[in-house]
Each structure stands twice: as C-alpha cells, then as structure tokens.
Image (cartoon, rainbow, N blue to C red; front, side, top):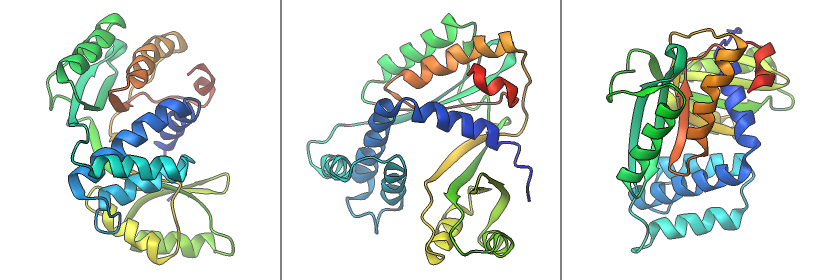
Length: 247
C-alpha cells in the first residue's frame, strides 16, 4: 500500500510546526484544556484527552506542562473555549480549511477574514468545502525494532488502515474516520505508541501551482497558522518535492 501521495503535504505541515515549537505548545495546551473540560481529567476514560496527551508527548512537551493544562481544564474556573471552523479559497483556487478554538468569536473571524483578504483569498460559508476534504485518521510512528514490515502491514490493515507508507524507517498510516478508534486500539494491543495520531482533513482533489503562485498562497497559510486562535490549517495544494524548500 505504498505511494501515499498525501504524506508530502502532511510532512511539510509537521516540519513547519516543528520550527515553531512555542506556538505548537500553545495550541497543544489549548487542546489539552478543552479535552479535560469537556470529558474529564482521566485520559483512560476520555479518548480525546488521551489523544491530546499522546500528541503532546510526541511534540516533547514537558510532563509538568501537560499536567498543568489538564488540571486547568478540569477546574471550575477554566477558560470557556468555542471550537469553530472556517472555509474559503486562497489565490489560484486553493481550498483552505481552518480549525480554531477561541474565547472570542468576533476576534477570530475578523482575523481569519483579514488574512484571506490580505492575500487575495475569500472566506466562504461553512460546508462549502465538504466535497474537497475527507476527514481521516493519520498515524505516524517509527518501525518497532524486531518487527517484519510485511507482518506489521497486515496487522495494520486488519486494524483498519486504508493507506500505509514507509519512509526513513517510519510508518505513516491513513484510515477512515470511523476506523480511527479501532486502529488506535490495535496499536495499543501491539504496544506501539504513535508519535502523532490525529484526525486530519485530507483533500480528495488537489491543485498544482508554479513556484510564484505557491509562495503567494503560503503567505496566507502561514499567517493563519501563526494566529493563536487557529489550531490547524488544511489546504489542497499538491506540493512537489522540489517545492518543499520554498515553504
């Protein structure tokens, strides 16, 4: 099941995130806080919190930071956050999907709309990009020592994996939204702890851009990613390996 064409975009996003560790910690802390507030402070009884803790550990967040965020979220005086999404188009018809968590909707929508306008895009209505993005589970982990890649692949398929790519000793797995929990439990039974495990919006149609067009639209994407209220930004650009250095 090699040939996971979507991994290049996913990898690029992760690389950009790694370069902005401080902002990533801020976003992870917000997710930990919201997860604890909505489902309780026990990761074993709260799947969303368990996933948030897993991703925080994967980003090398200190244990004390994780525990403080959970404690804050479970407290009676924790911040009230609203989760919302925004959909629109950047320049050259690039679809851009934004997930945000905010304590001030007016501030967030103003910032997102301003970013789209500044860089030649337009904010659309919710649901306008549903036909472009599929919600998928995405897991990444190093190949466990002593395992046979073929045997591991068969086990992952049994757990619900749709696409599997191996690269530089890592497994990158995509599954359907419905199989996310099944694959998560399958990895637990195999004593595999992913470095990242999350629900992502994967484009089912993509657009190719020349270098100049790519640089322009990425100014919008990076501006959105830098917004403290924005958790994740997805797009449908098919970036070539050569273009990775531009973004």
